[in-house]
Length: 121
Image (cartoon, rainbow, N blue to C red; front, side, top):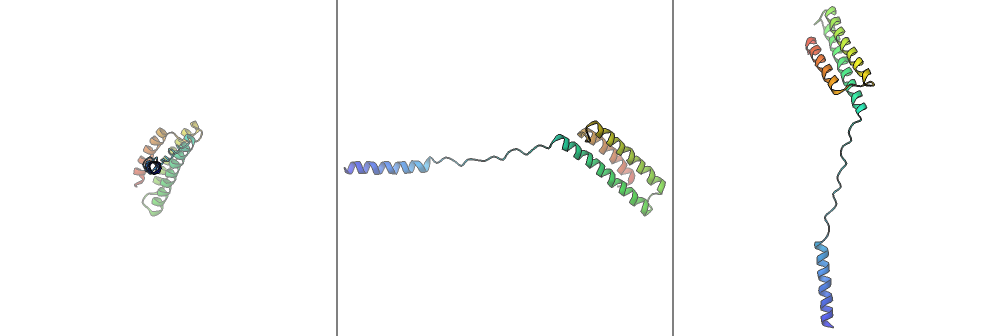
């Protein structure tokens, strides 16, 4: 009898120790990868960025003319340059359902960089 009790006590002790050692590691919950933007939304966002930049440059031309840095004819010529770039952006956007591809945005940004240098940013 004492051997049986001793054997049961040892078995209980060993099983409790085994339960402590064998606990599984906590499950890692990995976050899903970030959602990729919808290509159409990205194209529309590119177009909006270009038009916002053109609008900003146009306001800068107006400010320069109002401050007397440029005579009005020079301001008009710079506005015409921006109008041509805006028309190019609209023409490109109509080919893609209202948005711009990354390459088109790059080309337009290069043209706007030249216009910005002419404006005197």
